[in-house]
Length: 84
Image: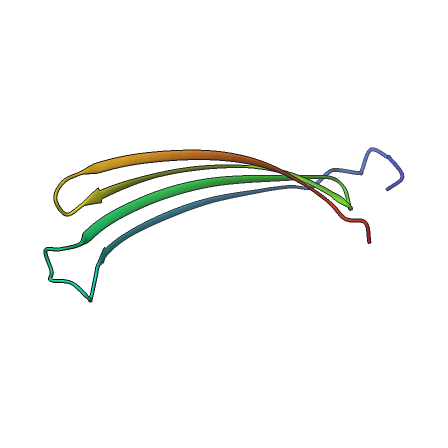
């Protein structure tokens, strides 16, 4: 913490992928079925031990059993400050 050349701010990166197919157990087999795929990227930077700054990007796709498709994306930013 002395501000010397060896002090580096930690950066954490996380990349995730998920894919799933589901059917409802409460309806007939052709009533509800979906395939979803998603990706997310999170970066967290800690300039000091009490401050974290982060960004997140999420992208996903979905296809229903009847062929309807869609895609969505979102992004978010955060800042956490610890007082204790």
